Image 1 (cartoon, rainbow, N blue to C red):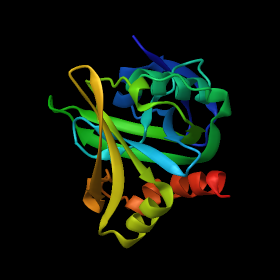
Image 2 (spheres, one colour; image 1 turned 120 degrees about the horizontal axis):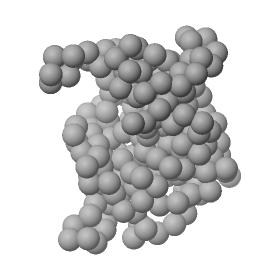
Image 3 (tube, one colour; image 1 turned 180 degrees about the vertical axis):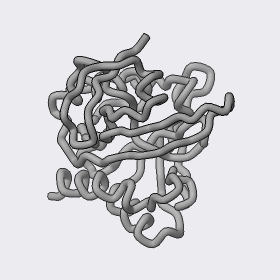
Image 4 (cartoon, helix red, strand yellow; image 1 turned 60 degrees about the horizontal axis):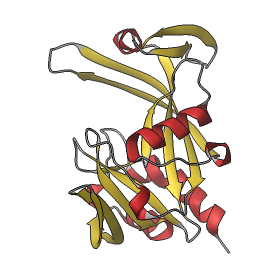
Length: 207
């Protein structure tokens, strides 16, 4: 059983509750959106296994009693297999995320999350990545400036470096990524979803 800290809509702490009940009863809780970038102004998107589209480097629920930055470090390690100094993670923004969707059993999954967005520098080797095969198909490294322009135009392609795992080895290849490959939910825009984090990486790496 996994417990999450729960809040009212204004962020006032109410206690903790089982994760299943949190999503059954639409209780507000914290999630963390984790982004890794390098000193050259590149940012890592993960390839979500289910959708085969690009999303955060890693993301997930913040557990009861866990700080946002602790959740950042845990999610990065769980999903892409690297340890980072999460104390160096820098704040980008907090978004209110509301979504209801029907599950296969007919029940409604109710999401009411404070999405805490942070970035952290990573200058390690591609061989260090060890993806959670149940969630992640690989990583895509793109230039933040070029990607920002792509998302503004809502069309075209961006040069990328794709890291995937084959036979327990990480394979790296170059590929152009079209705008349509970026994960965007109904009612969202790509620039609204990813613009702030791309601008933050540009700000942190500008010479």
